[in-house]
Amino acid sequence: MKLFNILLVVFALAISQHTLLAANVNIQTFNSQSQAMNKEIPAYVVLPDSYDYSPDKRYPTIYLLDGFGGNYKTWAEHTKPNLQQLASMFNVIFVCPDGARSWYWDSPVDSSIKYETYITKELIPQIDSKYRTIADAKSRAITGFSMGGHGAMWLAIRHQDLFSACGSLSGGVDIRPFPYNWDMAKALGNQWENPKNWEDYTVIGQLAKIQPRNLAIAIDCGTSDFFYQVNENLHKELLYRNIPHDYTTRPGQHDHPYWNNAIDYQVLFFMKRLATKQ
Image 1 (tube, rainbow, N blue to C red):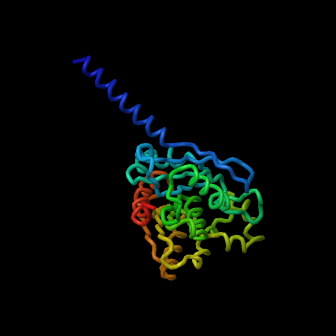
Image 2: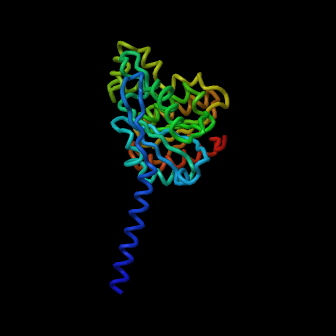
Image 3: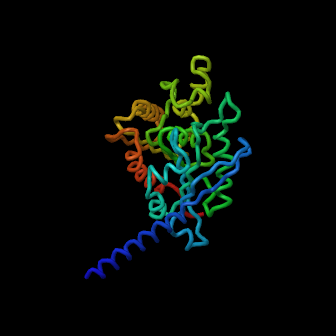
């Protein structure tokens, strides 16, 4: 009986190790080149299980942007440790670029910060060239948490030729109430000296650019989050402008457990809208 138990434990450990190795194989580090910033920038690419077994199949892509102080590993290793399982469940490729502390802008005051150019003109073409994506806006979505929620909305609204769906999880969708926080002044200049930058570089100021029925939008924020009020304001402004969107609030704070739960709903929202065939 003891021998049987030992063999059972060994078998379980072997299965667990195999599963872990398979997941690791399907989470790859992709070093992309940014000519705009003259540097190499890493990203995690998370592939579904079927990727290796369906060599002719192409996949929709969801870009996941990290928050301030995070990096390209944050989504897969901290926020959503079972991200690869989620990729397999929906047969989608996740791309997690490193956003540094950029807020995903091309800075009007610092020419070394060009993350909007990097994501839209450099990273996406390189991903589409390297991996079997469906290289079309109808099969591409973007979301993120905190700074990444702002970045996802900012990039999608301004580049509707690249994205057909976008989301925000606890996003800093209006930066103006936070002039001293999260290094934003390094990219925009001090608010009192550069008020136009702070008006022009906030998500809520971009809504007039949304073309009718061109962008599926999902916004999610916890009711105890310090960004809750700016998300409420964005929701009301979208309603006022008659822009369709999903808006979800539930008890929760600005933390990874909240985003771990919320991303499941957003991926489902995206996959109902993304084209899965060419």
